[in-house]
Image (cartoon, rainbow, N blue to C red; front, side):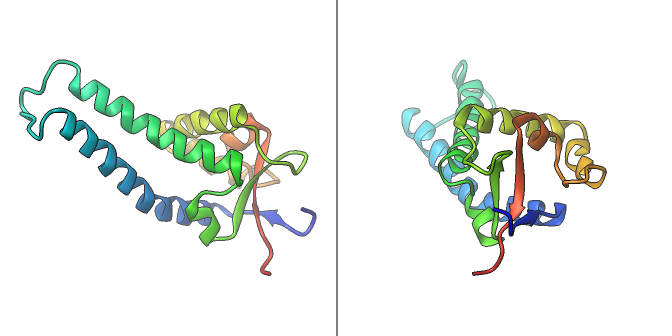
Length: 145
């Protein structure tokens, strides 16, 4: 994509906010399944052993799946489509799922480091964040059609 350019950090954040909408729906679905498995009743003070851990693990897994599948199958999440940005490998091809998973994990590290991994895009010439560099990808702004 020679006509695309690196996506600005504010576009990344705008897409992330937009991506919260489908994620909220997925999280509610997962929580509903867990509640259904508990026969509609869970004591929040004293939940069954392992319930909280299993729920958190399932929420994390569905979040990872949302991003990894979106990035590796179409190069875009729903929020990224709205802002016309896409993830591409260094050679311009689709990002394979192992590298998309690496991108997700390093993005979490970036967040846990007080967002430093994202603010790295202000230093990088190509506006890449830590997770872009680690996964050999970049976030590109698509030209209007």
